[in-house]
Amino acid sequence: MDNLRFLTEILMSESEYWVALKVDEWSSGKHDKSVWLISINPKIRRGLKKEEILLTDLEALRSSEPSNISLSNSYAPFQLGISMYNFTQGYPVTSDVKQFLIDALALQSQDIYDYQSLIKQPEPKTELITTNQ
Image (cartoon, rainbow, N blue to C red; front, side):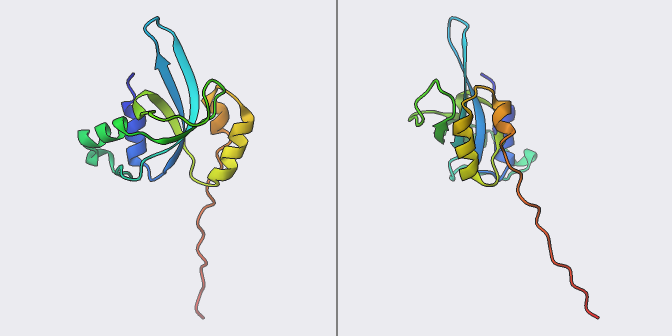
């Protein structure tokens, strides 16, 4: 499974939490898709520019074990030994992670786009502009 684009996206982002699609391929040719909320290991370098990403960064992320919660019904909620190897697509959850998790667990969908629609965008930072007169 080639997930290089998704791994690169993670390394270029500052986000710790992601809703991600995991695709397991079996020797019979069947695919098993599941949706997870994952937390990237804080030891993984993130916030990099594309030209700063090294092969060692990609390998460290691919072999890391993220904290995870299965949002799909096909798995128990918490799994040990899950690596980033089979995660192929995802979206950062940048604000109100707790509310996202509550809504996502109630959704019970197998489609990652349903979960993407639950992600709340962070409030834009506004600066108070004052004028001295």
